[in-house]
Image (cartoon, rainbow, N blue to C red; front, side):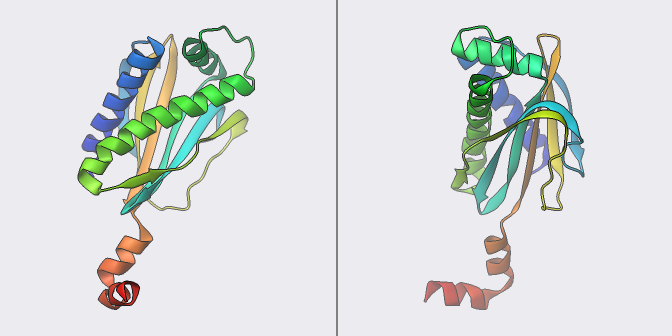
Length: 174
């Protein structure tokens, strides 16, 4: 998968979820490849894991203000604070966006699974993936705030080992 392909898939999925489920139109921001996971941040970060012949992680991150706005649109109510409902709503938005990306990826990479979302809220937190790979980052402008979607995919260990070691394949098939 190239960065351009991932960027297009992320853009399509994010625009679809925001316009269809939230009634929000996004403006495209910059996209780039980063060799490191997201830097220390504050706000809300929702993440899911992807597994299949390729595996990785995807995140949706934004400020607390934008998380409250997005959650309000999804749940049709106003939020003054980031609470359980906002965190649950952001997990669902992440699940929808990256679930749509997963569906697009499956056309090229075969069946994949998607983990249950994990949502983090706070200040000066850092996330880290043990995968030493590049992250495709796509930014969107929404209601005067920035929404970021990050995706890191690598061939899964099982696939890598199987392709490099034919003996493992014959042992697994016996």
